[in-house]
Image 1 (cartoon, helix red, strand yellow):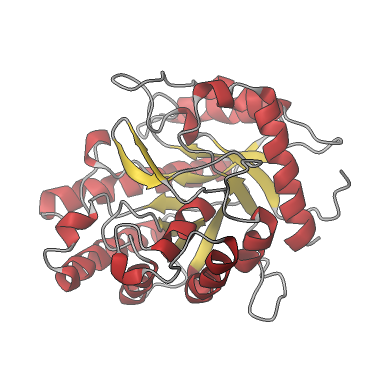
Image 2 (cartoon, helix red, strand yellow; image 1 turned 90 degrees about the vertical axis):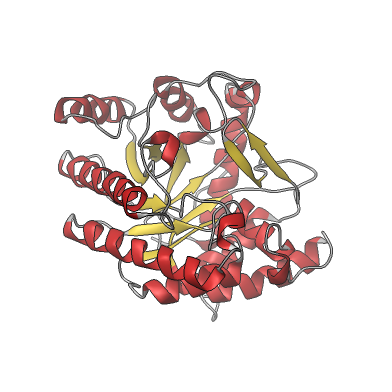
Length: 345
């Protein structure tokens, strides 16, 4: 497969080795070295992944990593000809964080996790292995709590996100709030827009679009009032996604390529959310390259050039699927198609 553009760089997500896995789940963690090796080994007609996006949580990368720990991580990446990009900050209570909509103590824990992730981001850039990337966050609380008082809930989350944005800016970082149906105030595309508008820090706090999650936005999972596609029909979903992307594209800092079959999945401690399907899943409801263009091109059809890298997300894939080298070759081929269609030099 010929590659026609050099940008954006192509990354693979490391958190599918952790999320929904581990003790009390059907599958064990996949360690970071294995995830890095699988990523580095993938190759399609001489093209390889350029880097990875990381989860700042044990057992992969501790949020309390020392400078020595980070140097080891940087060396691991460099040895595999990979860089790192965006980081997931572990803002949830089970990982030491707290609700962005919670009491003073919970919010303080949330902000401390953001601060630690931002510091790691700055240090990895200084080590020469992080040329671009954001810190990913969410509200770390479910929609049910938000529905008790939606206006107050959004205002509380917005206040926390503004404080987090100030922390990020001081470290030279930006924050991307992931629109996912399981997070309060972010569980519907219109709610997400209102939250970002209330935060009102467009150069620091933006949106992280994952195609598997944003597709579910059109169907109104967890937010029936936000539904704009009435059927799981490919053409109807594509038309609905035009409205979603038009509203959220101006806020979007970070972009995940993914597939979804219109269903949800939860595993381990992770609530039900968009099911990430294989790149060639026959039940997938999106033409991946076509839908990626809604995020990567502006209203005039020109590439936005806003993403220095794009990332594949296969969250909660089975370990059997993830340890099959062919999985990553198929994904890489899809990523190359996306870049060929919507990239630049």
